[in-house]
Length: 350
Image (cartoon, rainbow, N blue to C red; front, side, top):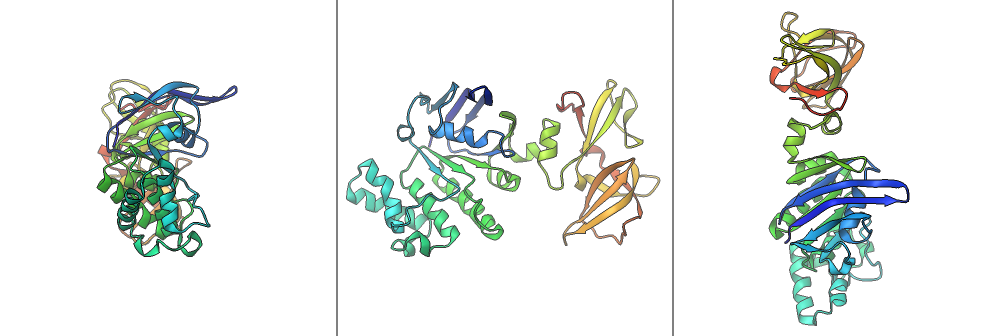
């Protein structure tokens, strides 16, 4: 268990800057998800923490000790990779034991740790098998076991579930989170899957172009996105974002209507509202009406795409309606679920 601090961390490859002065304090025992699009720098960030890449500038401290110049072996960090990285000629027990041999531990201590780890991960019946005789989920548990057995200060996960099918990913998400909580170990988990990030993490670090766009608890990212980028990235279906104008003392003009809002000033804004915060309304109560372009019924939700004032607007309802493409649908946005962003900077206003 350890507190990890990143101070003004940068990384460049030649003239190309990958990370732009990242700062983060990660508490002892905290589970952090690093989320972002491909190429945003999240894996580079993880590799620098692990010591597999050198930082161009900045510092990394673990429990107050600067480890920026230390090699991977000296940082007391264990990493679980996407590819499992198991030795195919070794049994499960030998794979788990291998890092303990490198640490120079005596046989009795190694046997104790292997037994404890195998029991924790439900691997005891498989200790004599080789990786080719295991399922994908079992292989991932062995990869985690090889990390856990070292009893490191920090766990790093680099998209560990990407190779698993959808059902197994859901199961392994729960297993990894429960395991982390039982061990109470500091963990950093890199993923491009927002569902993994939002369901597993204590806080989510959302990265964009080598910068931290927002670093907050999952529901804060969802309920109060700090920017247009966060609003558009987090949520399925994504938030509706439309150009509007805030008019002092009047409201927000957008989608050929005026949304009620106590506007202190006048300025160009981006108006945001999530599809699930829209309700079908009467013509008198509606904020807008639109032509129904398509429907998607998932059983628990009815998702609509409307054409409103020349723009597509998504609506997600938890009740069923008998609607046909071409119908005109009147809608109202819940007043306390409107988001406003500065149109020029993309930053949150309210």
